[in-house]
Length: 262
Image 1 (cartoon, rainbow, N blue to C red):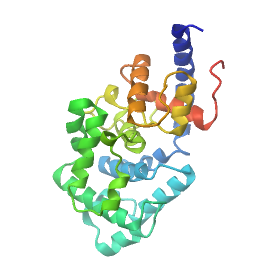
Image 2 (cartoon, rainbow, N blue to C red):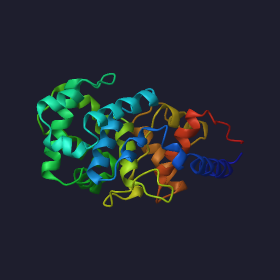
Image 3 (spheres, rainbow, N blue to C red):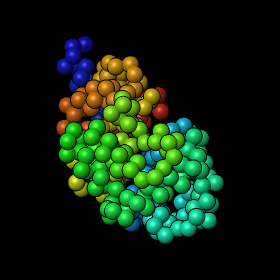
């Protein structure tokens, strides 16, 4: 098969998978179901960011843990972040997920409070960085913003650093949730100052394997260089909304729909 024919076949297959997985039925079994519990912008941001930070491993366990956090916050995460006392925070601190420990939760709550004291939305420190080199500098700018506040060194490992080569899958996923907007209503599209065209793919094992199978990614490691390589290919498929293909790559990988002849 010629390269142009292979590329066309990949596009057709990915577009089909986007239609299959970018659907409201996707929400219930995905971590994005947590921010969908809320309507206030800041509640959506906080619940989404907290959930994204632990979005590795078993999806049911991720959702269960995040739901517990929301319950301990009385389903008012923004109010909790801004007004809770130490005793109330320790009730949330008790719920841990793998390497995200109670100490990390206390650092996160403190950083979020300081951020919202400075800005009305988490979008602002991201958007300021996006003006330079897109997601690479956007994530770096936000990371430095949060880490300027007092924290334990262990907390830093939960904020991926693409400047050091990390694919930053969880933060890119959070950005997709906040920025992307289409008629399906899975992603929120509540951030208006970051173009969808500048988003980067939330690369993980599943999406990386499918991308390699389709000939869209050659790099073997799932790192930032691989993100850049795959971004370049996906922007050829849809320059305005390249990360919509996260639904296709991740959904196909999880469901093992790997036959490009299908």
